[in-house]
Image (cartoon, rainbow, N blue to C red; front, side):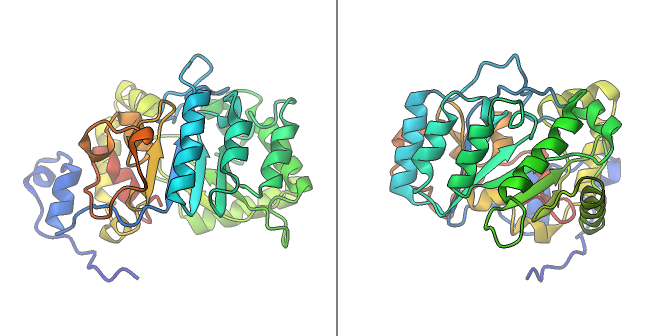
Length: 329
């Protein structure tokens, strides 16, 4: 349990002037360092191709993106997982369903870690051609982390596109029918929601309660865990913030909500991210920003095992997202 005082020290000059204090300065003001602990999770970003063009996407993913992990890098990821023995391997994108080698990757890592996670926007999984992928995920007991931004169809359409809400609801019902989210099956289905604008998420406990009630009542849908995260001011969301004149105010909201206790459990302490071309980052957000792990390019083929403990994590002001309020773990 975090016992660090939440009372801030003397206000910095940036705060007095109305400017946002740099993230690294906030750490120093609280006598904190962000360094790597034991790395137990390998996150694999298989590419930026996606069937959606979400307004909040930190990667600028979309149908026009061509960055996709090729077979050679897939094999290198599998080999790296074999020699590193992570507790969790977390597959993400883009829409990972759209990578042509995704089944090879899932099969290749299925016995390399006790826990396999698969991040889905649901509509790509439920496009009428990928029932085989649902079956494969079930066979390896992969945890499905599904993005489901809103219970409101109009809000979802505004953020993700027309027809996405219905496809997502239908996908959740299919996953429930396979046993996902159902008690006693060991098939874990978790939902993630993000705000639709330049504001922080509401109380996670209250939002989760509402999602459980509405999804069960309207569509008979059940799930295991629920996470409500703030949007990261990178990529397409960063462009929207700048264009709408909301960037400075949004970053200030994140900085004002800085929670020293959240720093102790941020995911970059125990996770490393590998991009579609095999290069390494402290997290998917640093990948989006192009901030190499350790401050210089390193490739998965050059790694003998997990990164060493105690290595400094590369930070920038977008890191305020993961330390605001309850944090982003």
